[in-house]
Structure formats: structure tokens, C-alpha cells
Amino acid sequence: MNPPLSWLPSRRQWLLGIGFTLSGALAWWQIQIHPDEVAPAGQRARLPDYVALNFTALETDANGKPSRRLVADELRHYVAEGVSELSQPRLTLFQPDGPPWNARSEQGIVLAGGEQIRLSGDVRLDRQGDRQTRATHLETERLDVWRTQALAETDLPVRIRSDGDVLTAKGMRLWYAEPMRATFQGRTQIRFAPEPETKP
Image 1 (cartoon, rainbow, N blue to C red):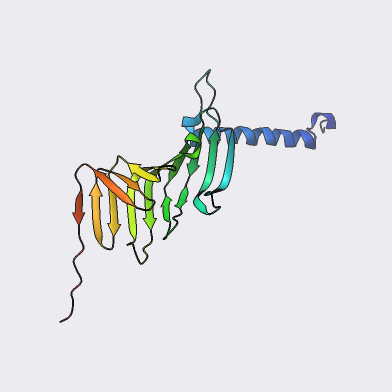
Image 2: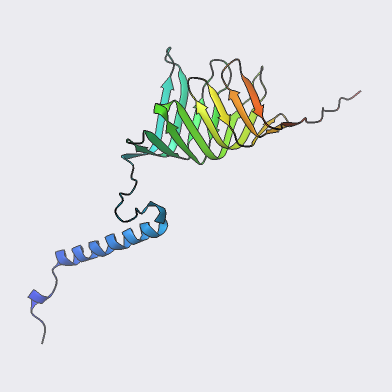
């Protein structure tokens, strides 16, 4: 004997059941992928107030010319902490004369209302050469960029390449605006590239 139709779930009940099952599976998957983001009992999970994907911000000077541009795959802002976390940030520091500095890293944090940007994880800072300056390529694991001082600094090992010359140091302070200058911390080593041979 066939059961009465009232015992069979309706289409809506089927859809609700499937939805609850998928929601539970998704929550379990998120916990397995990001176990560190699960708050202990009695504590609220640390969640951003808002998230922006494919984030881009352009800052201009008093004359309306670009002074710096920040791009990131994702920005997560925490209002109470006053910080924004960045994924795959790219920072361009424009110069009044000459090519800009271009920085990139794996992660970043915007602090002090944008006054300080901390780049971390495989940080690269590059500037193309022109008629007056040589191309420069810098590598480190963390770099703090300060807007007002036009300063980029790190207390971690840094490696700088320029036209075959290589400089290594335990830390660095680089004032990237003109007139550009830098100081290095700890033991600093410089290896000069051999001069090209000239034909007699």
C-alpha cells in the first residue's frame, strides 16, 4: 500500500532540508580551512566591519597630482582597532621628477589613518632608472612606509640591487623623495659589479 501523500515531504521542505545540509557542510569546511578564526567559547570572533575586493585608492598632493596609489586584492577594515588589513598590496609612490617607486608584498596593514603602511612577506620595492638615477631593486621581509616623512624603513635584513651592484644590510632607512638618501644598520656589505672591458 502506498503511504498517504501527507507523509511525503513537499518540494519546499526538500529545498529547506537541502539548504540546511549545505549550510552545515559549508560551516564545517570554513572551520577546517580557518581554524584560527574560530573564537574560543565565550569570546566573539574577530570579524572585519567591512571587506572591499579589488580595492584601489589614489591620493593627490595640494596641486592635484598623484602622490601615491594603493591597490590590493582584498581590504578588511576593523573600525575599533583603526586598522585595515591588505591581501597582495601594491603601493606606488609617485615622484615630482623621475620614475615612481613601486612596492608589493604578500600582506599589508594600514595604520594611523593611512600615515603608516606596513608591508610584509616577500616585500619588493623597485624604481626604474632614468637619465639621472640608476634602476634600484630592494628585497626584504617587512617594510614600513611613512607618508609625511616620505620614509621607508625596516629593521630586518635588506638586499638592494642596482646595475649589478649588490648591497646587503641588517636594516635600512630610505627617504625616497628628492633629495633621496639612505642609512643602513649593522654590518653593511657592498659587492660591485666588474667594470665592462673596453676594447683598445
